[in-house]
Each structure stands twice: as C-alpha cells, then as structure tokens.
Length: 554
Image (cartoon, rainbow, N blue to C red; front, side):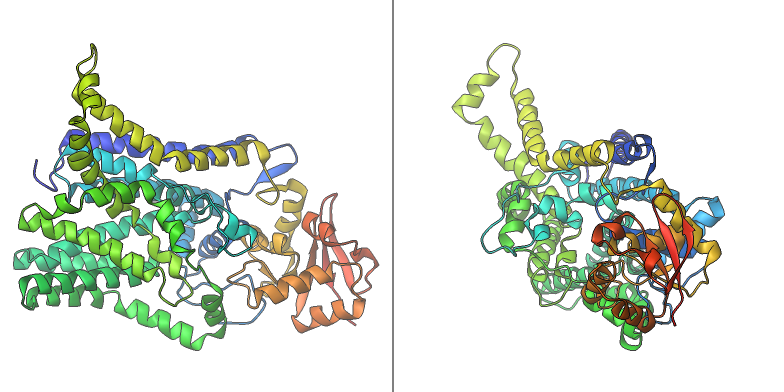
C-alpha cells in the first residue's frame, strides 16, 4: 500500500477506535453527574478549579461578546479578541440553546473525535503498512511513560512533586483528550497543517502546492484562534525543516519559499493584533507574564517518553534506508522531535507548551522501530523460534502478542489516569469540583441582583467558579488572570481571618471598589470572621450554606 493511501476498512477501524476511546473519556464526567451526592452538584470540571475560566469565556460568548473581558481581576481594562475559540463556543451554545457547561462537554467530544481521525490520517502519510499504522495509532493515543519519581533537584512544592503523567496534560494525547477541547483540537489542527506544509515543502506541482499553502495558512490561522502558542512551534519546526531541505538539495527552494510566504502571511495579522494587545493593554500584559509553565528537569521528559524513545531509537537506520521521498518525510519527524527538545528549555515563561503533540512523531518512529527492527531481531532468537514451533503457537501470533504487551506496558500511566479520574468523580467527589447546591444558589442570585460592573470578594476557591457560574467579576480567582494573584489571594485570606481588624478590611474593600462579599464553605474554612457583625456589610442573600453581603462603606 502506498504511503498516504488508506483503505475503507482502515478508516472504519480508525473511526471505531476513535468512537470507543472518546466514549471512555466521557465516562468519568458522566459518573460525576450521575453519582453526585444529594445536596451537591458536579461543576463539570476534572483537574483544576481554574478551568472555570473557559466556562466563563463561553458564558461571555453566550451573551454575544466577541471580545474577552477578564472576569478574574478587578482592574479596569478594555476587552480583547482573545480566547476567541471559547467565545465562539458561546455563540454556538446560544444558537443551540445550551448552557456553557453543556457546550464545554460537547466541544470536548467533537474535538476528541476530530483529533483521533486526523491522527490516523497523519500517521498514514508516513507508514505504508496498515499493521504499522495501527501500532502507531495505539501508541500515539494511549502511551505514557514512567516519570513517577521525585528527584532531589525537583522544586519542593506539592504540585511539582506530582508525577508528570498526572500534571502535564499537554505531554500526552490521552490526557489532552480527557481534559481540554482546545488541546485536542489544537493538536488536530497542527497535524493537518503539517500535512499540508509537507506538500508545500516537498515541491508538489505548482497548482497543488499553492492550494496546499492556502490550506496550511488557514490551518495556522485556526491554530492562532484555538491555541495561539502552538504557532511558535509551527514556525520553528517548519523553518528547521525548510533549512534541512535546502541543505540536502544544495539550492534555494524558491517555489517552496513562496508557498511558506502564503502559509505564514495569512495568520500574520492576527498575531500582530495579539502583540499589539500585549503592548498596549496592561492587564493582558500581566496575564501573559503570570502564565508561567516552565519545563521540569529533562530527565522527566526522558522518563515520560521512555517507551517511545527506546523504540524510536531503533528506527534510526530504517528511517534512513528508504527511498528519497520517504527519507525526507522521516527527517521531518526527527526534526520535529529535535526542535521540541531545544524549545522546551528556551528562556521564556511558557516552555512546557512546546511539548504539545510531540507524542505523534515519537509514536510513528516507535512503530517503525518496533515492527521493522525489534520484532525481526526477536524472531531470530532461539527462545522465540522454540516457542513458535510449539502446538497452537505461530511466529505471527507471538509477534502480535509482543506488540500488544508493549503497547499495554506503555499505556499503564494512561490507564491509571483514566481509572483515577473515574474514582475521583465517581467516588471521592471532592470540593470544589463538587459544590453544595445551596452555595451555587447563592452564586445564581448574583447576575439578576447586581450590576454588571460590580466586583465580588471571596476566597480563591469560590472566586475561581463565580465567573463561570454567574458571569461576575471577582477579586481573586485564577492564578494567571488575576493581576498580582499571590498578593490578592493572601489579602482575601486575611479578610476572612478573625484576627484581621475591620479597618484593614474596609481599606481593602475601598481600594478595589468591591461591591459584594461572598461567604460560603471555603470562606468559613479561612477563619472565624463573622460578616454579620460587620457594620459595613449588609446581608442581601442567605441560605443554610452561603450568604451574599452588599458592601456599605462609611
């Protein structure tokens, strides 16, 4: 079978796997809704209460906005054409008469299906054998590694001590698909755009090359809307591969260069706008500066991709002993991996984002190394030959068993992640992923009874969800989008501490023009402060779990 040619049977099998995996990924969420304890409600989130930021953006889209206003900070600022993917989901939700949470889950399902289908098509571009494609498909979707260890050189924080497989969704496709629709769709767009870029760079006939260039340009534009940071990866990988092709052919590839001009000219205005916002809008500047996702020690990446790296290393010779066109294709995969390895440690605040999607080239090369190098060598061993000659055994059957075993071992971390998600949402059901219904009723009271510009003071835990639930501005609630997050979180905690004097509380409320104070479970846990005794707070809503107070300063 020619590289890139996919039979109808293959597509049916790939679609069946995509549907099955997508259904499995929804099970933890379904259990959260179905098994929520009486008096509590599942929020629809899985790993991070701050993911309410995405629900908030969808909510703004439902209200008709195309410009995002950060609701997690009290500083006045102009909204911007940012978070457009989630704003667009809000417009779709309004058309479909869906809530923000329902739209969030629908987007996850669709993004996962798109990712898995595009993934198989991308794999087929590099591997001719359907059996090798299936191996690469399974490794790309399920494999994770063994970065379970905490080393002496790791930062001494609880978050950094967690296994990489459990705290870096972008490192693995399974985790990305389990959590965020913009991760899954971003990877799918990246693969589709790379597929088109390969046609541009490998000197297709002029008409096809131009069409591919426009398609890749639109793909880059969509990447800029869905997951803008991936654009830096697209530029770096494409540039490195283009330089490699010119070095290999010892000439300037003018047609390809013109095609690349089209590819990157199409998204250029959007990224120029992003840069303008970051230069002129101080609040978005702070957001960008606080959005720090640094890479862990390199040994963690080595461990998390260990199964793929071992098998991919075996493919080095095989990937260079093929015809010229396929050798260029495999070179693209090696260049992608190499560029990521470098970018993960460039001196910027969002290093870790560059790992998004790198599992795909690793899985393709790992399948090649496993099927064309490891298995033939294994088949020549005395033990294998002896086993294959036993009754009811065959060489082909033993090889399939070995492949299944390797995929299973490589997928243990993903299985653990899925199982722990099932237990977390189906059994443990922790606060604040699950919140008291009465507390949510207090949040639901806010939209109809407060002004759009009113700011709410609460704990970090409540503030992380009030914008998602009620669409209201909060004093603190999201570590990236709250300006001076650490300072404000500490100030909110002092506010609810009984040891804090009223003069300090009044000064805080006045400085940030806070209009209401929210008092629920998380606020009670911060201290014994009783808002009922504060003359500057007037109770305007109350039930057995939560209260809302209007600020009345002297």
